[in-house]
Image 1 (cartoon, rainbow, N blue to C red):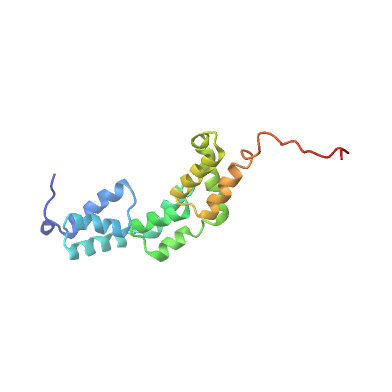
Image 2 (cartoon, helix red, strand yellow):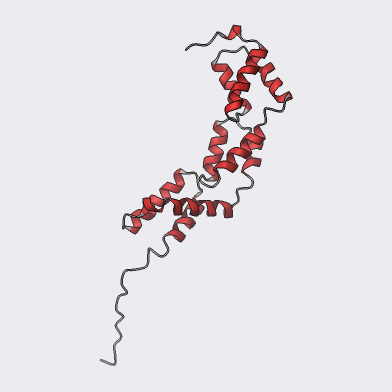
Length: 175
């Protein structure tokens, strides 16, 4: 299904298109601009349509960024969230403000919860391999190296106890 060419778009039609998109989910200004570019909407029409949405307070990158972080911070690390926001075209200062509440303690708690929820994945029996898999799992989800190391150490601290204690030999008075 091909849409009309960009020359057929006027500002009211572009605003209506953007409102239909926003009815489904939040978009950043950059995402909406990109959607209109793909439809070959003229530059002046895109600027006018985005300006109208901003006037109506329907376009707020800060709100979108904060919602994105709030909704995913329990299962993704700060690095992955930063990458997500960059991909969505959130300006750097807005992105940094949205990520500010994610301190080291929150990230460690989130990493521990992720490991606990997915513990079945790291249950092969070889503690070294299980630890490596758990660390890679957290790293892929954007948790920082220190957070990964601490979360994995605490998750596997009981698993690393030796299965048996070697006998200690004392000379027992034998010379």
